[in-house]
Length: 113
Length: 111
View (cartoon, rainbow over the protein chains, first blue to last red):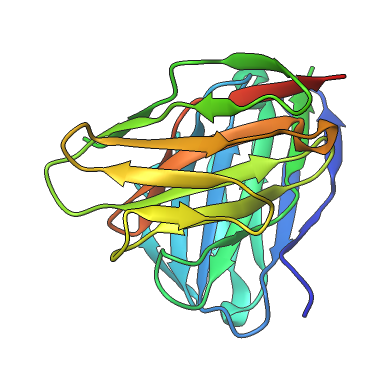
């Protein structure tokens, strides 16, 4: 079984540019989560999809971040325009059951310069 | 709000020595607790979890953690570490539909 896959693994962009991160969850997992770790701090929740619906987006920092999950399969997280403080590692995770057996991807390291 | 505290940001230890990574959480309700590990250049992997039942849970590679409700702790232990255990370890609690993580503890095993 393939795990959670994230693309790209690294991205370096200039302030003001747009970046789109992609996550492919484990097949059959209805729940998809985005988390972020900024500069060695805690890993923090961003949002949660159940299939194609946003269940909880309370952790999204501001309206420069837009997450979508087309057809309840893969998800994208767009940052537009990127700011320096957006640098960090963005993790995607998925689960079949809500919450308690969550598998994480390898993360996308985003650097905004 | 839920919070998780990992008191040690780094723990250096010699190979074959015992280690304890501390984790305390704040909660007044039933909790589900987790330890995740991130090896260098890899993603987060579930190490072990406490959902209910026995308060002592074990992983396949010799780690164990004990849920202590009175002390609101979920410390991770291993009696004898290997070089390959060098990684960053994250304690987390499930709060509703989201995981709340501690800041992480880097375990450095030296030969």
